[in-house]
Image 1: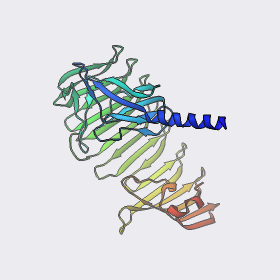
Image 2: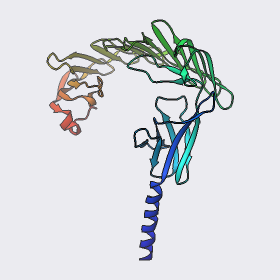
Image 3: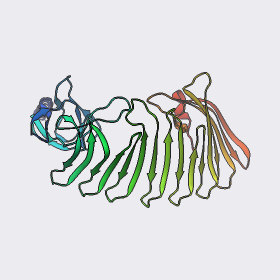
Length: 334
């Protein structure tokens, strides 16, 4: 019985103490060391996924359930995501030294607004890590990038280079050892509306891995490559072909929007083996929603009209009419 009461006491103590673990985030402006609370942020424990954030509107205090190391995420995002180790009950206050260049919020697809010391960024500005290394530097005009903004890793290598033009903005991204990872171009970035973008991904060798263009109407065009440089996939407005590295077809896709339900796409996928023989033909429907963008992945389909397997040119099996919302467990795409 004594052991039972001891166990209950420990549990109750942990619960009570957990209710008193609180966190507050404060900002120190880079130019004048003025302190202020930060309202819009959240914490995620290192190694976990659950998000903690202020529960009350206009409050900067977050209640936590237990001790631990938490990563801080700002909204809008900052250049850093610092980690704080919370080891005691009561209120833990973390003071964050703001960068000299901060990305402010933006509306719609308009370019982000940059601020410095609480004002719109203007002229040539630099920002430094606590070690003294340059973190970012660039030229601004009324809160917008004027010419170029470069962000650096702590080792001095370039992290991101943003080149601003009159009707286009180009973003180059690099890894910590200088390999170019991605180049993205945004058309008419200062507009409230999306006018399209194009992206190129690279292998470490410098070869192009993927070129992707999204038009203002939302159509996607892709050409993808193997590390050898051979074509891997080619996608147009209503079709896509995947290739083996030998150059032979691996799969073909074609699709059309349903004339009655415009958010539904009727898709046909034909699969080939390495010798060019058709091994499978799948007809399926994909229902597109804002949080569920168009995909050719059969496992994400809303309905399978038919799935036919072939061997030596002959049909060997067929399944029909699978409602993926109800019977997804019964369907396995091999």
